[in-house]
Image (cartoon, rainbow, N blue to C red; front, side, top):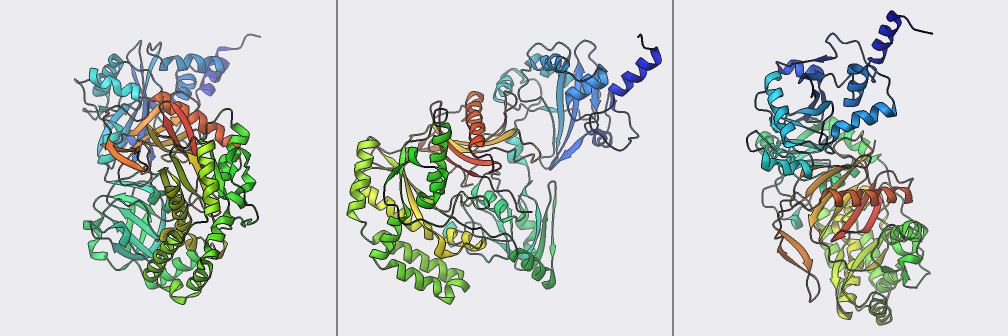
Length: 634
């Protein structure tokens, strides 16, 4: 039956309704020009320190549409429902996505971002958009005519788009990397804490850092790690995946970068304060003793972690191919997880060949030299519980006793033979694999030692003892105390793996750490070479966001390293110039890493987001660790 004209008009209006419900608005769903910031804010949406709006240009009429992103979340929603007034369908979506090709049949689709902390405005495109330089110029000109900011800069969001900059010297441009490093504030973990403000003097060495759990610290250096504290403000930028930021997230404490924190809060140094970190801003004010006591009581009731009980009966050196996740009680969680990956996805995912030395040999090393008795006496000493400085001093002496004691020659015979006969006799990585790491609720990232490129019998023995001793690293002990893990329950196994002389390496988290509502985008940090410092936070690595649904990587920052770590032919590692100006990660490499990570998610489906360590040997992806990513406790 033929429908009446009024019905068809009503149907068109219904199809034009927004895809996201919301309160009635007094402004139209779109406008053709924006002449002030207040109007922009009506049509934009705040995301932490940025305010993001969306626009499109009709390539046939040259008309610009600024639409309300709070009504139409996606460009496709606005195009199909509001402009075309058609029902959403696969056919319509397919036609819409042709606008991301080089030849734009209907629309140029873009974003306008107010980078509030960097004090800059930019326009950009989706990272998978194959936009051409001519269309970027056209966009810049039309925005100049219709938007109140006259000098909007083009911000490329992918390697492909960055390549256009050489053709666009006639318009303002800026990279995400420069914006990231220009910002004066960024929240890495939101929350509120009360404690005593401690401004750490510039130049303070990492080894001398000593804090109370109730301290709120202001850091003026980039440190590889931090003992438990109540809150962190840093004057230097790092990334969400630095050890300090990961640690703060696991502790559930407020943590942000604030470049002028020292000058702004010098008058409060040593006083009780309350720090409240939010996405776009923060507050820090004097606090009362009552507020501090209430916060401490709430913190002490926070979650505790149970570690797997160690099985001390197994004595074989077991290859990774014969391990499963349940073998964490024998060989530690790191080795067991790699064994599980090989069992489930060994034909699709590459893991460096290796084997585990079980917990029992660690315990026997301590017993043989009376170190178990010494450890028990140390842990029973009241000063160990009460005085952090004394605790650190005694732990250093205890580690020295572990490494000085002779290793069991029979064990070393077996390890040396395995490395020679089954790993080719080349340099190996000797790594920790404890029962107090890579757990849900406690990943232990960076707490224990890895010894790279170990060559020869003597070096193997020394490396194994160093890994055993690292169970008692000061920061490891402090972290376990923070999560209520009894010292008597922890054991160290050792993972020995064939060395990969990586051309690049880093960390991937199967979550967008810049937009926690986005579970389809992975966050990748990368550095050239072995990447042993990629999470140390001492320099900013390359940061890439990769959406696994669509091909395209968004570049957040480029690596600022002028040197990298590589294997030394004599054993160990050495530092050499990078000798390259190309990005660490091409889009192809980011894609390969992300595809491998997506497969790992299926290996550990109950773990939530994964924290994955990877290395690249040329274009070959090697996975060297996978563990649960620790989100802030709620």
